[in-house]
Image (cartoon, rainbow, N blue to C red):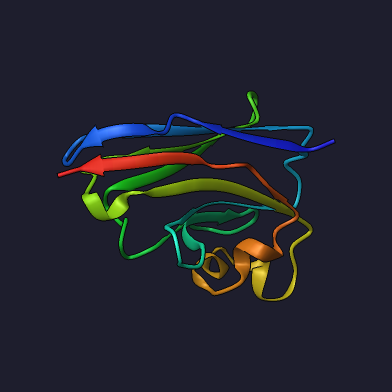
Length: 134
């Protein structure tokens, strides 16, 4: 059984940093699509960073480019999101999600930024809240 469990969220002042972790127990890192998404009340999930295996690059949303970095520790089956220079508009619940044997439009990391990608994933965590105070 695959389980994704996020941690590392919290309250931080603007300009600060947080590192989110997502442990993907039971997930096989073979032909996969993995990403971090966030949601604020009343809005759709926003794809902020994703990686499709076999791809040459990681996708970052324009809103986080240069500030956030996604990495994967395959030995620990853990996906990280390092968030620096946080802004109040980064306040949201952050989710990791994973998919295997992605095809069609999800064969590229860029699918992260398209509507509906979060819902199309095979597995989701329950989310970790991040609050950035001004």
